[in-house]
Image (cartoon, rainbow, N blue to C red; front, side):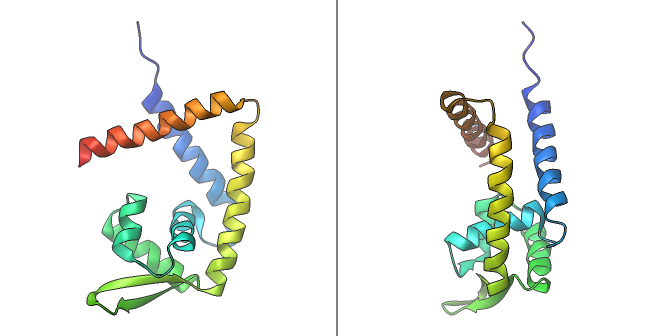
Length: 142
């Protein structure tokens, strides 16, 4: 029995989702990766940049560039950690909070489109499978 091309389909789906978000957020300059940072900060205000990096599974160099763009765009600010001068904290600006709202609208719209035609049980299986992929992948790396 030939196995389904799940990895190929997963990579294609990831690219399609990122392109969809990037195309619809081009007026903000935030994009899919930037939205991930903003969503994290919306729930973890004044977070350590290392925590954001870990939560998003990003590389430190990639996160640095992304934060630079978000800072230049007026969405986040950096500040030294009061307990550790080497550590950097990130916070949303008022513009960043507005961008979170716009990004939520985009993601909600995409989620609606992606789940159309699937019942709750099917969506639960997809969600469980994607969470499983993440756990298996992280266990292999870590």
